[in-house]
Length: 166
Image (cartoon, rainbow, N blue to C red; front, side, top):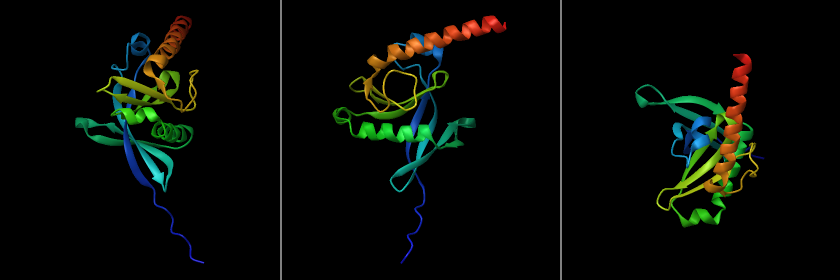
């Protein structure tokens, strides 16, 4: 019996990664204040996403390797991409895939934006703090008020903590 050769991992699909802070989020009408901080690359072994690798903007705006990730968020991102690929709304526009992170809320989502049709769709990645289930496509209009409430609650809690500490 002949052994199969191991499948070599391949880096595929770069996704720009955007971050937005609590103060900007709490008053935002959209996600225009989100900043692109890095690129996230999917690392596949065969058809399975096994990890992600991040590249950040380094000196002179040159890409620099940052880190490799495994685990729940990697699996969650792969599931969100699959959900997007299976969604009929994706066939009606020219969507750009982005990764949206709100570190202070432990929130990550696949953000699908179509500038031509002015459409923003969000697919929360598991695990997450919102009432929206992972891998469910929601509009930014549906999700933004929920995220803003979380941001305002977190900002208020920080203010209380600063008063106690200070």
